[in-house]
Length: 264
Ligand SMILES: [Mn+2]
Image 1 (cartoon, protein in one colour):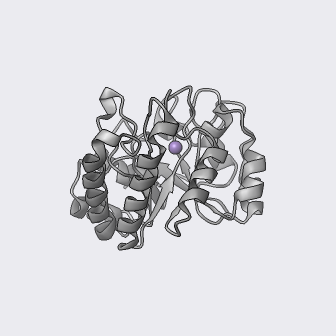
Image 2 (cartoon, protein in one colour; image 1 turned 90 degrees about the vertical axis):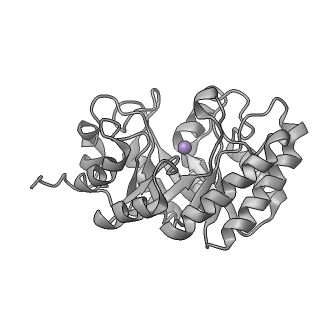
């Protein structure tokens, strides 16, 4: 049975960030993820999670200056110290929030071959550090159309990095949207690797909006995820088309999200 989570950075953006936890719960979610929790203190996030009976299923390492175009620091030889400071900050949040998984966006590189050693060393540092809080580090392929120069674009590239690292505390985050944008077949990947994927994110294609706005067959996708043996969370990570709370009809029709609670 699919466990659906909401990405609170991209969804419920009609509300201030601290209020999105309550909106997620009211809409039937029991798990949430955020790209970057660092604007609130870990104690503040912990109380919003517990008030709303929510699990924090994933967040990201600090990824540099997002507005300036940074998408992670792991591949930049000149920013190793900044990367490691970010890992230490994230580990502090993870420990307080009992976060089971943290995603490492590996960042852009002018030449992935030249900076691969830096990337591998940084991932190993993060994996070792996060093992202290029982937090698993993930890496995520990101399509090169949206983020030109991103160091890991395909599932095969991510698997080859994992193989080379051979570290028990690093795993794979699989984003169906990025996969399709890279002309992969997500059904084949889920069937083959479902048991070893650590986290799944979804959006419809084209547009990266909510399920039901594009061409992805989500009934088939949720069935494929179930049949693969994957037991983790499936997060809605998309740009809502229209109001966020009007965008859940399709996933509700498919039976993977409960009804919205009546407001008291
Ligand atoms: Mn993603």
